[in-house]
Length: 163
DNA sequence: GCCAACGTTGGC
DNA sequence: GCCAACGTTGGC
Image (tube, rainbow, N blue to C red; front, side):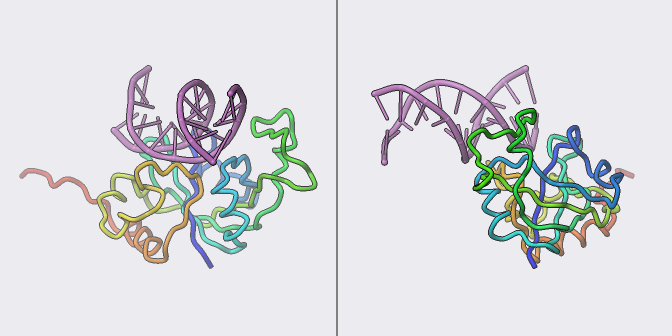
């Protein structure tokens, strides 16, 4: 089983939005990047675990956990001329873009902010936070996963008050 | 709103 | 196949 980080802009679709859906599940579609497509096609499998990350948010960071409820299948929005993700060059016999189904499993006790992730030595290598990394789906190692969960369960570090 | 990073497109 | 132009992402 592999582990992943999925990004979403909460103004478009937040973890709370997912949590509120029937079965806490949705189709994760609209992904239009070839590297991401290849991850979905070649590596993401049903049952894989996912960190749900809020980008362009305040604060940015990991807010919840999900699992892959259904692995890659043709993203129907690529064939929908009314949809922003419409791709006129994609053919039904050979779909270019893939979607998965994502199911929320747990809300973190507190958000793991980007600042906190960057400040953590064990999370320095997290693909999603590398400079210039813009992929909306990136791999997470077992060690990184464990560290995020460990920190989420720990009380937040706050600047020490002057006495 | 700015801008750096970087993927995609299309002319040649 | 090169590469400039353009679009998007996403932190700040």
